[in-house]
Image (tube, rainbow, N blue to C red):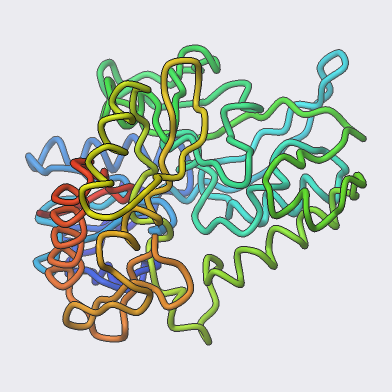
Length: 349
C-alpha cells in the first residue's frame, strides 16, 4: 500500500464541533489511486467506511467509529473556457471558502453568497449547500465521483445529481454509493453577484455591489451569527445550522397556523417555496417552542447568536448534543406538529 493507514485516531479535532471518539482506522487519500487502495483495505478487512470531508456537517459518537474513516484530501483548482462559460474544477479536498475567494478574485460570480461556509468542496454537492439566496446546484456543471457499486470513476451531470433543497442523490437515493472526487462549476466572467437575500438587498439599497463587496458583506453577516470558524468565538464551535427549514404543503401550513393559535401564536412566518409548498424558518419554530439563545443541555447549548446552531461549550459530549437535539425536536413537534430534520450526518450512533 502506497500510503499510511493509521489506527486509533481521534476524530474530534477533525470536526468543527470538536466532538467525537476515535476511528479504528484512518486514512487521508491525496489521489484517486489512494481512494481506491483505502476502499480495498476496508473491503479486505470487512470494515465499514465513513467518508470524511472538512468535518463541518457531522456529529461523531463519543464511542468513535469502528471501521475506516477515509478523508478525501485531493487538492487542485483548474480553469478552462467552454464557449461563453468558464469551467472551474476544484478537487474535493479544497477548502470551500478558499474556493469562493478564488472565484471572486477571478471575477466569476456564482458562489459569492456561499462565502464563509466551513468545509471542503467535496461536501457541497452532497448537501446542495446554500445560503443567502444561492445554492451550489445553480452553478454545478458536473461532479466527478468514484462509484462504489462497480469501482469506476465517473462524471455525473447536474441533472444526474437530483438536486433539491439541502439534498441530492448523494444523501438520499444513492447514499453511500458515490465518493465525490471533484466538482466542476460553470461560471460566467464579469457577471453580477446574486443579491436576493433580504439583508443583502437592504445593505446595498438597490445598488449592485462588486463581487468582492458582496463576499465581504456575506462574511460580515455570517460572523455576526458566529457562522464562520473563529477560534476566539465559542459560538463558532458548531456544525452550522443544525436543522433544515421545514417545507410543507400549503394545506398543511394552514393546519400548523391553526394549531399555533391554540398556543396563543397568531401567525407563523413563511416563505413561498413553490406553487404548492411553503418554507418555515426552523429558527423561529425553535424560539417559539420555548428555547432561547444560550439555552443549555450539559455542555451543549444553543448559540447565543443564532438559534439554529448547537454549540460545544468546551467539553460537550456527543450525548449532550444528541439530548439537546431530541429536546428541541420534541418540543417543536408538541407545539407545531412539525418534525425538524437535522442537517448534520450522525456517525457511530
